[in-house]
Image 1 (tube, rainbow, N blue to C red):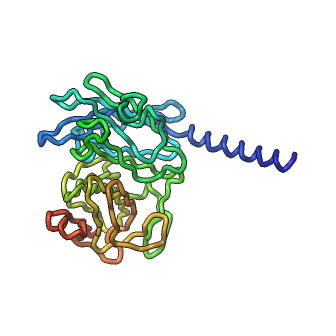
Image 2: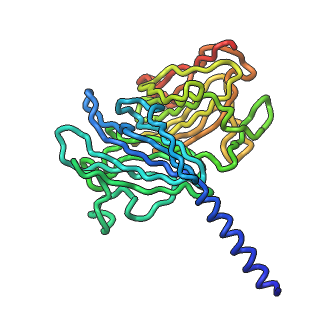
Image 3: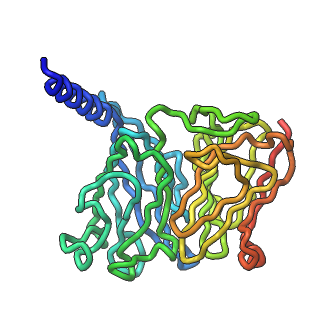
Length: 316
């Protein structure tokens, strides 16, 4: 076999393996609804989430989610190699306008972009009253990370209404199941299964909007605005901090440090702009012990407007 033939064979084998890895993932069958809260704000709601594995077995995990619409919307957790079919229903009372989901980070074809024909010149990719719309996503290898999803249609056929509450989080975990973190003074590979709690904090203008993924209770808990969050000393906790809106922020967590993803830099403050994300793992109370630790935006005007919360570390 010539060198060129060997090279072609190796490339073909690698592509087959990569394709097999993707095909061996699970398929998430999701139905969500866009709704209006009593406050007049808009929100996404999980109606149904089932997961079909490669053997055809189906697990229903709908019970993990809040039964009500929430801001931010339901956090969808996938693993590299998974696929998702996300059906959106228009449940906004008193409105006949379309509503959509545009997702970042993962792969999809143009008919799952979540935009309107006036912009994409292809089709209206949104749900209308009585006419749901289904999006198809692929969490291909290399798409691991924390990603936003949001509306791109309601009220404005180009901009949408993410600023009114129609946004949520997609977390794609790496296929290997591990992420880097500074633990006990060393950079280590942490098994995601060992993370007890995850806190999602969206920074919207002058307010934090929070959500907890509690893996001990296997529940998603809406935390709403400027929440106090908590963990036991020594627990591994993952934060997902995301910006939305028009403001730029600096996120600071007292008493704790983390490594910026992809680096060995130790930080306790990061800049967060619109749709900028920072995801990191810490060991609660490491080196500082239990206490009521502060987190806040370090832009003074935002802090003065109340953009702050507490991280309560309880003695184990």
